[in-house]
Image (cartoon, rainbow, N blue to C red; front, side, top):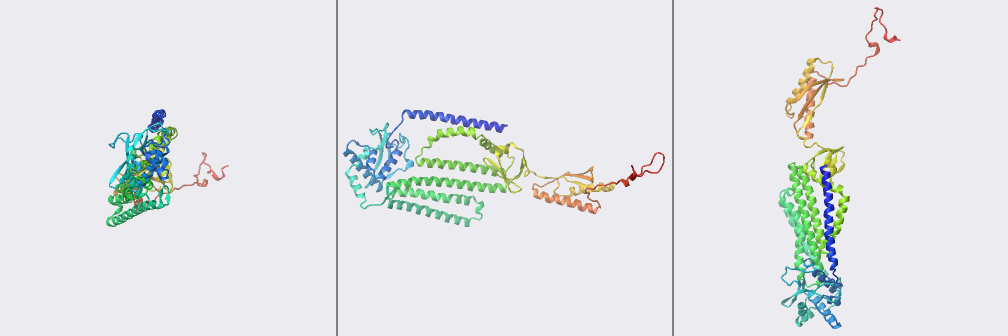
Length: 545
């Protein structure tokens, strides 16, 4: 009853909380609808503006790229000048210029407020003009090209510096003279250079990690129980990938390659770094949990094994959820927009997944209450077997027929569970039948033989009893009530066998036989003769009419 009540309360919370989230999202959506922002060139945030500018530069559409400069574009001459500036910016970026990685760019319409710049300015990169460095600054300003709100464009100061003769000379010298084969907005040579450098780093560091791991395995006496080796085994492969990503991240910015190729690969390098970090977390969780389980098995603390298995799954789910959200953010997907959908999904979950919530609460009950642990031999309802796993939703039991029975934890926590593994001793309670026809003295001797056998055995607990219980249908029954003082079932069977064989041997020495089912049949001719009251001849039962 308490479990069902707790389930209903959790279901109610799943309804109330998403409903509150939906109401909050509705208010936010109403406010956004009042001040809806439209910009045909996607310049509403620094991240979106830089991404769209790179797309235009990669496609060679310098007229479109001109829309991202804070210059007037009213006449053909002004538009041509802005397109020239865009082409010059592309050349300078390809020849060693830098842009901040996608994940570092602000995705807020107001930009960053902690960068030391004016509120309407945002630094997004830099250009190398000889010995000098020219910052690339975006500024927030209004336009006349269909936008209903301020947009982020390259600031007038940066435009002025790009228009100087010195910058024009440097860009002209950096302009490639030969025709280049282009792929996805960047020369094929640049793609090959960057991808080749990444592969060399990743493969080289991974091989070094495997070599270090092999050396550690040879030097450590027992790698399977060594926390250092397990941590090293978990850390080296993903850490090598993470280090390779960090080196490539720094190295790629210094390579004279296309800014389009560099930014795209650096963007995916961030994804690889996230995956490597979560990969390291998953391997570390496995290593620590496996080592803990091995040690708990040695100390026979089976309940801790169940808790460790459950916690391992919970931590893995959290890590995977983290990397999923981070990857979505890296690709520019705003995960906050899914809150309303999650709220609606929460209502559906509350209405349709009550059983799942009950199983989750049941799993907590099973772990906290400890009715059965991994490795216990139990009886749940009609199912008899060994507990193999206590999971988040269900518990698996291996039966004596070697089949697996899966019981939802909600049902398991509400059933009667008989745990055979927690017994500290085993009942020895046979009924020994001896033959009818033995003298009373022999019967007393038989009882004494059984009692003495129990008392002399070292594994029989104190105060055993052996008493003549009944005149049975075919035997004189001696009941034994005692305990074999061992916790292991297989060992108890050995001592049980020893006791029974010892009793049998001593009965044979004393001439006392073990009874077996018998029946005496009396035929009519063997009945005693009945005499008449007048003293005549005895009646013949066979001729009785």
